[in-house]
Structures are given as C-alpha cells and as structure tokens.
Amino acid sequence: MDPIPPRLLRLLTYNIHKGIGGLDRRYRLGRIARVIAAQDADVVLLQEVDEGAPRSCGERQVDVLGERLGYPHRAYFPNVTLRRGHYGNALLSRTPIDHAENLDLSVWRFKRRGALHARLWFDDPSGRRCPWIFNVHLGLTEIERRIQLRRLVAWTQNERPDGASACVIAGDFNDTWGRLGRVVLEPAGYHTRSRSLLTFPAWAPLLDLDRCYVRGPIVLTRASAPRLGLVRHASDHLPVVVELRFR
Image (cartoon, helix red, strand yellow):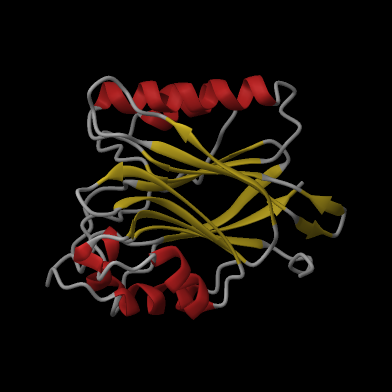
C-alpha cells in the first residue's frame, strides 16, 4: 500500500484501559473502536492494550481494532505479564511501518514500562518523510517518570544526535504535577501546545496526563481532547488528537 497522500498528519493517542469502561467497568471494545473512528486519525497510539487476557475475552485487541477500523499496519509490544495474557502499547497506522521495536523503560522494582518506537513512511509535498514516533506509558511516581523520560531522550539523541529526524513523543505521561515537559523535554528541544488538555478522569477531567511533544522539522499545529458523548464512558482517559505538519 502506498503512503497516505500529502496533507497534515493526524495522530491520536489514547489510553483505552483494556476496553473496560471507566464508569460501568464493563468490557466493550466496540466503544473504543467508535471513539477512534470518529477522529479519523492517520496514526493511532494506544496504551493499556490487552492480548490473551480473560478480562478482555482473550482477544488480541490491536488486531481486533485494526481490522474493524481499517488500519492495515500495526505494531504491539507487551510490557506487563498477567497470569493469563499481557498488556502493553500498540500502534495502528494507515501508512507503512518502516521499523518497530520496544524500548524498555522499566525502573528498579516498579511495574514494567516501555516505549513503542516506530518509524513510519509518510509522503509530504517536500518529499518522503520517515518521522520517529514514540508511544509511551510512564510510571506512577515522579522520580520514576523522570528517569524513564531522560532515558528515552538520551536514546533518541544517541541514535540521531544531529536532530535531523522529526521526533514525536506521545502517550500517557502520568505527569500529575505537569513538570516533565519543562524539566526534561523542553531542554532537549521538544515543544508542545501551550494550553494543557484535561484528559483524566474521562467523565470529569481534572488532570492533563495525555500529551504530545515534537522535535525537529515538524510542528504541532492543533491539539484537542474530545469529551462529548460516548468518549466520556469508553475508557477512564479521554483521547488526545493532534495535527502535525513537516517543516
């Protein structure tokens, strides 16, 4: 399949809570699918995605969602192993995936965490691009999150120290105090929209846990967190939708 046509790259990041509703605690992956479909994103980054777990009917959710929504290119890497099954981060894409891997961000004795790293082919009016996408789900403590994000930033700098590649870091940062961007990402050259988007809990959002940062020849032109109708019940997080343009 050819890369998607030249235009803004629309990206969605969403902690789907294994498809279990934040209020009714029922497993309804169809609700998640409808929320994603309504945003018409080119690239979808998902956190807390199940595979083989009884609570989600043993489904491989990345494939169920990919097939239902028409995303032919997918990647999934587990981070947390359950007695039966596991869960982790996933990526759905309309444009071909050049490379995908899981970067281990686990710290000490805390729960295992990882960043799904993918390079995607995308046609831009100025030529073919291959942005680096990082899908993260960081830890629950402040020190853990800082170590994880610094490790990820160091990895990107070591792999491409000249900063020539467009980099996107998005996902569930669990940054309850709103410090990670200012302390870790901005000094490394990343930026985001100045206005924070409240995404948790979905039914009455108070915290901006879900974010997107970019670096290099790419600009974040628009960001929103849809909160009407079904989206308030499908998960315990709201999705964040951003539009990106190459420079």
